[in-house]
Image 1 (cartoon, rainbow, N blue to C red):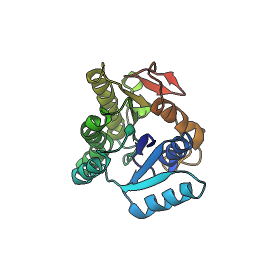
Image 2 (image 1 turned 180 degrees about the vertical axis):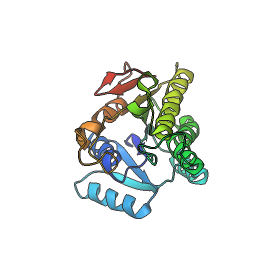
Image 3 (image 1 turned 60 degrees about the vertical axis):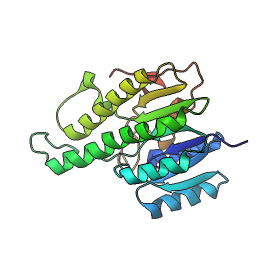
Length: 231
């Protein structure tokens, strides 16, 4: 029997890599994608070396041609999980009053437009399967309930991703596809830095939980540590 397929973007390091590892351990055929082909292939080899079934696909989430090519490849596969993990963080501590337009554009293209285009392109394939799970890796920085100054572009990009989560979840009600967002917390990765209090394993846990929800699981929610949090 063909395995369920899980696509993870930005899977070559950090949380994305750990999500790939945990999903593969749960029996999914994982497609690890990344913008950097060399780093992505190295990551796949590490997982294969411990006996996990993982394959590699090059994917820059801002490249619509690559997204369409990937969709063509997946059109006959049992794609049931999409984890939108790829993201960039270019404006740490910057004031929104002085952030350059290029930083705004690059951040929104990667953190918002990329996941949206992947969802638009892959949902028709996921609808063919008995179930589907879309997990958008967001951040507490994007929560309107605690919005504040500095790092504004990153915050806005994650707020937009949260909006995508709620809108798409509502539009897919009545189907077998569930859509949720997650804040992994301040995780000890290259992005989070060495002082972050959350381990990579714990940071990936809620993502994997949402990716493997049963039919009674939630949709249209925002979660941290497997608990709902305020938008």
